[in-house]
Image (cartoon, rainbow, N blue to C red; front, side):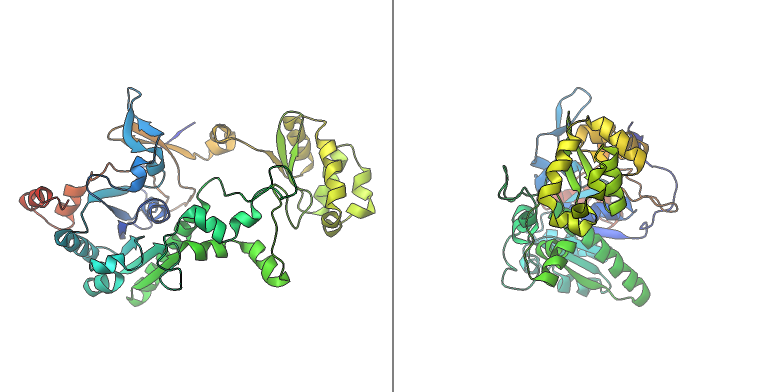
Length: 416
């Protein structure tokens, strides 16, 4: 089941906020899409003629009513709903003037240019703060605004490696298929976008209390180090670098995948009681009372003995049979779904996580709904990602009060 867009009259949490989005690809657009979902007016600035890099990152592309590809790559669609697209050549003095003028009418600026690049255009924080003193300005880069790596280009894949994630992701070296592995989605970009969202909202709250804007310096590497979470804490408190465990867990046993007769299941026995129910349900009650496996620390210590016994036990039943059996006794478990199975899942459908939006060239597009469910100010997800430059005239006219002749002159000069 695909949900309809939420287009009701509910108030918008950020309906009073305007965001000038100078970012492209994923981390910055993910942040601005969150803000758009919460009701902010997000003006996405794109290069005339080509726009955001991800517009060309296909196939797949959205299809029109006849099944033909449009120019809208699915990658671009994933991070740009709810925004207005304005094309501006910021390398031109006239384009820079437009951005400064838009900044006067904005609460937030988000950008992910290389360190120092926008300063050459007079569009850095200091320059825009001069025209809008209470501006919240968020820069997103690979390595931050200072330090020896500040001027390096940063990409999600590189940062997953440099930031330690790949050292703990993938099968153990001594097992078949062992070696470092990146996450299947651009996790560092996405988490940087999420942290940036939080920082912007905190800065807006501070501004509303004090009248002061501020500068936000977000770095992919910082985010990746922070999101090591317990893995980072394990190292800092032991001095021992954690290893890869594949689909197992360093601190909990059994907490991993097992092969069934017809597929795989995940068993996540987070305490001793759940472990005991697991082996009793599987017909191996002696494993529940074996002194080597009585507590989680002991199971971790004797992992290499216990796990093969559990694998042998699980291999005797089908995936669905195991899930039914373990759910009945309260042992956390589940299947490993492909993405098609995810969107066919009854819980995902009940939560309306796929949403269909009207689109000017495709007719309609189906996107993943925002997971933020709020009773008073719901995330709307009611406007499809814009076509390149779709709102240029509208924004220049309504926000900057430019006349039709002035807009036509800018277009003739290639500024917009």
